[in-house]
Length: 69
Image 1 (cartoon, rainbow, N blue to C red):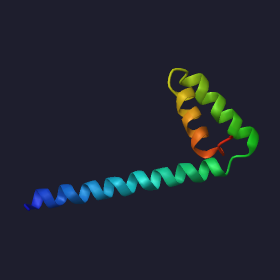
Image 2: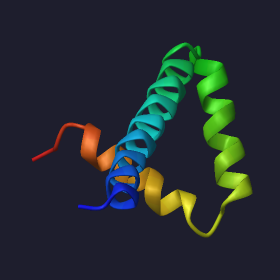
Image 3: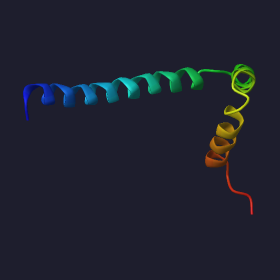
């Protein structure tokens, strides 16, 4: 492996870690919200992204909600 290849491989790892850190910070911010603020965030996202967010929200809720028989 050449020096640029090694540097590039390291960049991918750092980039992944950066994205993971950013995701963890977002999760912390969401977990800190009270119920009213959480509803406000979801309402904002529904209004801002009406073509894509509702389906993503449905998928997420299906993934975390208990299945009803």
